[in-house]
Image (cartoon, rainbow, N blue to C red; front, side, top):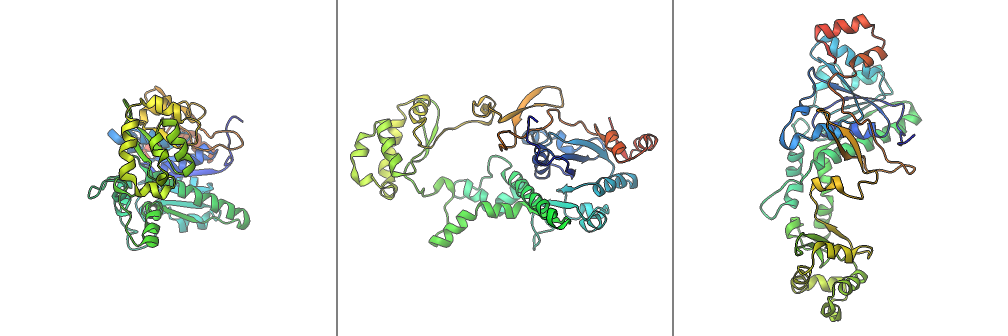
Length: 392
C-alpha cells in the first residue's frame, strides 16, 4: 500500500457542485473511500466554469467515479435511490430542499438505510437564514471575514475559497464523528455543516478580543499587532514576511541582521515595550532590510527559529521544494495534459494520502456502477437510450 486508505470499504454517494461539497468528497476519496459522484446529463456545469472557477473541478474531484443521471426522470431518481440504499455516506450541497423534492430526503433515505450518514453542506445551519442561498463570498461578507481582511472601509474577500474548503473540512469532521458513533450504535445520522457558521468560528478570535478588551478588532491591514516586528518587508528585489514573536528571537534578529543600535537600547528588550515603540522601531528595520536581497534575508534567517516567509504566488508553488516531497500529486486534466495539484495535507503512518490521477469524465463509470447494483445489461442500455442515465 503506497498510500493510507483508512476509509477503504466505505461507499460515498455525492450530489454536489462547485467547491464545498466536492471538497468534502475529495478528502474522503483521498483517504480511501469509494466515492461515486452523481452528475447531471452532460456533466456538472462546474467542469465548464471560466476564470477563477476554472480550477474548481480538477482540484476537488480527483479520485471519484462519475455517473450521469437525469434526476427529473423516474428512472434516474430510482438509480440514485438504489445507490443511496447501499451507501455508508451521502454528501450533498444543493439548495435547501432540492433532494427532498426528489424523494431523497434524509427522513426517507434513513428509514430505508438506518446506517446512512447523510451530510448536507449548506449556507446556514437551522435559524432565520437557513432558507437563503449562500456562497463563499456571501459568508465572508456576513461573517466579518471580508471586513477583517481589507483595509478600513474596504471589505475584501480572502484570496481563495477558504470558507467553502473549511466548511468541507468541518463536514468531514462531522462525518467521521458520526462513523465513530455508528460503530457503537449501529445507526447513522444527519450531519450539517455551513458556510456562515464556519466563518463565525474563524473570526471567533476577533469576537473574543472584543469580549476581553471591550474594543472592536481593527481590520488586519490596520491592526495593532501583538508584536513590533510582524509584517511584510521590502528588500532590494522581492518582499519577505518576518515575525519576531519573543524576546529571545529579538536578540537573534538584531544580531543576525546587524541591528546593533536597537539591541543596545535596553528599553526595547521586552516585547510590549517594542510594541509601544513600534513607530520608532519599524522605520529603522524597514530601511535596513531594504539593503538586502530577499535571498540574503532568507539565508540569514534559515534555521534560526525566527518565523519568516517569502511572499509567494500560487503558480510558484509548483516548484516549491517542500511540496515536492509528497505535497503534490500528478493529475491528468480533461484535455490530457498532466499537471500536479496539492494532496490532502496529512501524513498517516508515514504516508501521504492521494487518489486516482485521472479526472473522471462525465458518465465514465455509469455502466460499471449500475452493473454492481445488479442491473441487467439490457436494462442499462435501455436506460441510456431513454436518456435517464448517461454513459461514455
